Figure 1 (cartoon, helix red, strand yellow):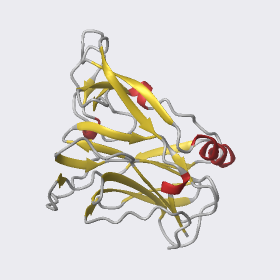
Figure 2: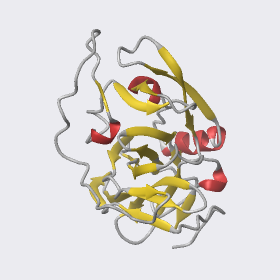
Figure 3: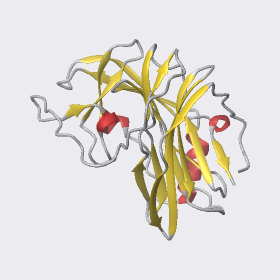
Figure 4: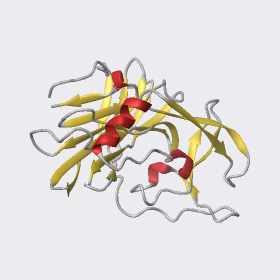
Length: 244
């Protein structure tokens, strides 16, 4: 697999989820997986790939990575897309993690349907104990979502790590603020991403938004009191790996 970008993480300890297979989507079969790595820095990575040899056209693949400490969201990207024909796409989270503890990677990938994009979760990665090289077992990360508790406004809240698809995550997702407090981000704000309708639009978005940060509020479980900020980062072009 040929690397088209310059980001090459040197992982001292890393662990991969099983490959998840889906499709065909517009006649193409795909696979995805999540990786957790603890080296010179701690990060999660998501890989989307064609299931088999050969490339898919430019803009057909998208991916975002999410890093969880325990059951709390620590870091998340916006979507990145392939900017040329490719067999695979890998995108890492940015930053240094949220301190000592147990971490998972749990990402989302997109495949062009001919009329927009289909979003699919990866499986959850095994856990990695930050400050240690010990890795736990992988967990499937698919199936039925839990019955989320609700706040006084009727909004569901809980850990995005327990969601099993982009459709059944809670309204309020447990997350760290930039100052290390624990609260909840609104799913609608976390997922407030441009929605390209075509590969051409996806490539244009990738060029325009690469490296751009977006701040959203972190609330209490009632979704009213603001506790701080969470930063959704979009990986720069140098951090995205495409394979052929």
